Image 1: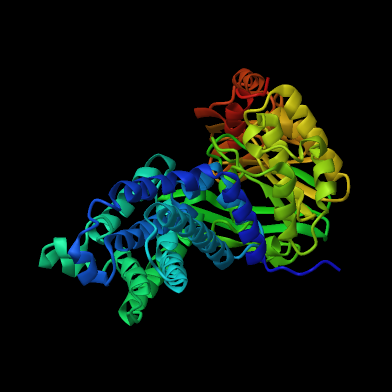
Image 2: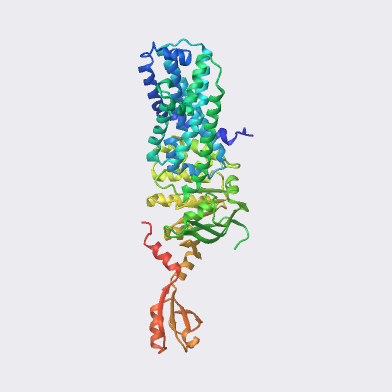
Amino acid sequence: MKTHRSPLARFLAFELRRVTRSPGVVVWTLAFPVVEYLVNFSNKADNPGAHRWAGTTWAVYFMVSMCAWAAIAAASNAGGARLAAERASGWTTHLRLTPLPSWAYAAGKILTGAALALMAALALSLVAGAAARPQLPASAWAAMILACWLGSLPFAALGILVGLEANTSVAQPAMVGTLLVLDVLGGLLWPLPVFPNWLQDITKVLPTYRLADLGRAAVGGHALNPADIAFLVAWTVIFGAAAAWRYRADQQRAIA
Amino acid sequence: MPATAILDVQGLRRTFGSTEAVAGVDLRVAAGETVALLGPNGAGKSTTLAMVLGLLSPTAGQVTIGGQAARQAVANGLVGAMLQSGAGSGLPPGTRVGELVGFVASLYPAPLSPPAVLRHAGLLSLADRKVDHLSGGELQRVRFALAICPDPRLLILDEPTVGLDVPSRRSFWETVRTFAAEGRAVLFATHYLAEAAETAGRVVVLHKGHVVADGTVDEIRRTAAIRRVRFHAADTDAGALRALPAVQQVRQADGVISLDSTDSDATVRGLVLSGTTFTDLEVSGAALEDAFLALTCEEPA
């Protein structure tokens, strides 16, 4: 009697084996946040703003931003160019000829993105910890990593949406461009008070800001802001539902 | 037609905008039968197969596989398929052949064992190879392997040998024949007449979304050679017309005579010599002939 595993568990195991075997993707998405952190963690060391914004040092504040950045970029690999290539190869169509339900397909892809995000958040924390040696209790580290990990879910769903919509030639620039806009407007490169008021209003809606805000609350030892979680859940639902809708449309489009 | 049809397609239609890609197809495939769906590019073969597999919803009509609706049959592993993958490999990058077969087989309720799949597809020696490093013929064998994973009673292949060299084609069809010999039905699309003739006991010719012929290749060739000679004539003797050279059948309606002929030149010559007074003479081929004209220019090397 062989042990019963759900189709989701099988698909997830299969996908994880594939992505961990091609580490190039993950390493590449990590390159920018790691280098950015190493270059910039010390040059605003005396920045008094960081204390006001997050109740912590710049090195810690910026670590949260870059950890969020890394998690977001990694999670988007669930879809993006990889998914566009799978669609173009005909593999996505073949999966529709198996009993794998479409919800298990979507969930498997999102969880793969989440796993990559966790690896990215851990890797960034290790680099930051070794380079800047920020003074931070272990529980705050763990909370920040957890926040970045769970907060990356809407970006996994967004990656799938882009991968379903874009063809192979535009998927990569579309994904990078979308994330860049969300990252910059979400205040990951420059802190929020740098922005004019009207832009801050936009920033506060974006999932990138909400993810980083969650991470900053974690390192600052503050209570979690329920609005952050509400926004992140809402974005996950919006991107996830759009992806599910496009997945069904793609089934017809792939043939016609 | 045998009662135990594994595939039953009735009145299948599909329109894209104002184009009718499939215009009312009826098709039954018996258990264990190998049927070729033959037609030129654009005849509606791929659209038909996509609807048979439940990938595309029909505008009208019904598909049942082993008595079940298409999606249900797919989920239960009654049917396996190898579709056209265009420029792509049809396989996920970064996987090994053996683990890909193992994963796909694990999704079905009663699959063939992965070693059996690899043996059938001639892939035992390639199990540890990454799919990114396979030749065209090897890729196609892997795609065949995925199609047989469910241990299907019906195997569907959409132009499976496109882009392959002659030895790869031969060995592929040998593999399919061996697999089908175990009592499974095979329905494959092709635009190569020779491929249909060599592999399938029965050929269904699709042209502009319609089934224009259904039978053995020899039967179809005979039908395709028939021309229709039509003309207007007032006083004619059906018996005399029937006696004209090469005439198979005579039809008369409202002063229009229609003769089915296996040699229209001889029939027309005979008609003139008989002294019959006629107007508006017209010689035409059947729809099947159009389909065959499009096909025979594209024989495989």
